[in-house]
Length: 341
Ligand code: NAD
Ligand code: UFG
Image 1: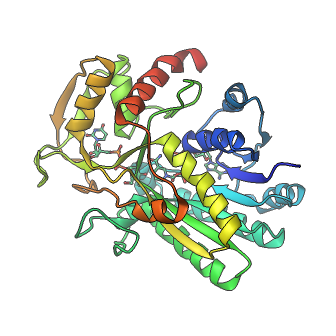
Image 2: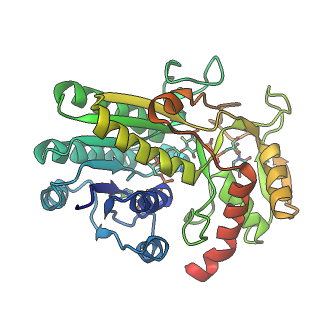
């Protein structure tokens, strides 16, 4: 029997590469579309070292409608599309909003148009916990009201969700799952794939590992005077491999149930403060981190964590990796990066 095929946009990136591995290991055939704007082609070799299969690769910009249609025409037997491709640096999106709207919105529109034209029925969309802004009540459920986006990047996620909802309404033959990721961290246990930020990292986890590796002098903690129990910001840090698994559950759920549109939080249900994460990293890896307390970072919400019960009930999915293993994998990956680059 031939394998069910999934098209993954942005499949060379951080979450996409882990999802490609998980899909192949679950018996799917994977086609990756990526323009490598924030990733490297040698990820494909590393995926095949883990799974034994090299995905079909199309080096294409998803904002190009003609190339996208060519690829979808060639792969019109695909059962689904997972759309990761997007630019994701919040600060850069404030400085260059048009670049973000153009890239993230046009890519999504092309994906949807091609899905309709070539009758590919199932879409998974990478949304973000940032759609909740600063919520009144925690943890947030999928029913928690959304807040206006605080950055053009965040706006592309809110708009993306709305564009998909409108499209599903007009095209009942399509299904879509909106996955709102909280804070994905960690790397594949093989040490062969992980997060590869360009330049100075914006996010906490790669900043921690680069500081531990001596690439950065010290970590700046952005504020310790928040109205949280210990004064530090709280987030829901989730293992990237758990995030990857949820995509498979979402695809399988859509194939079986044809649900129209569904939305799920992907978190652990556990909030950790910045200092708690740092201490856990130090203890998991037996390392001392050099850090200072700095000013608050504009735009940061004090606390955000998920109620992920809905994904558990409907998808049968739950975050299952331990924090300790996740933090060990992040450090192992950091140590491997220089060899792999
Ligand atoms: P990433 O930058 O590692 O991966 C994105 C991939 O998409 C990259 O390989 C990049 O080259 C590619 N890409 C970007 N624009 C493209 C285009 N126009 N055409 C083709 N390829 C393109 O990011 P990630 O962390 O893996 O994030 C994946 C998705 O998840 C993104 O949509 C992101 O917004 C979303 N998300 C990420 C986080 C997080 O913390 N990592 C949190 C919430 C949501
Ligand atoms: N932080 C530091 N120092 C750093 C980096 C971060 O103290 O050098 C703190 C931040 O202030 C925040 C926490 O660590 O309190 C997490 O920050 P990240 O930048 O790692 O993550 P965010 O929660 O700000 O944002 C991430 C993604 C967004 C996504 C959002 C959803 O970057 O794309 O999660 O919650 F929208």
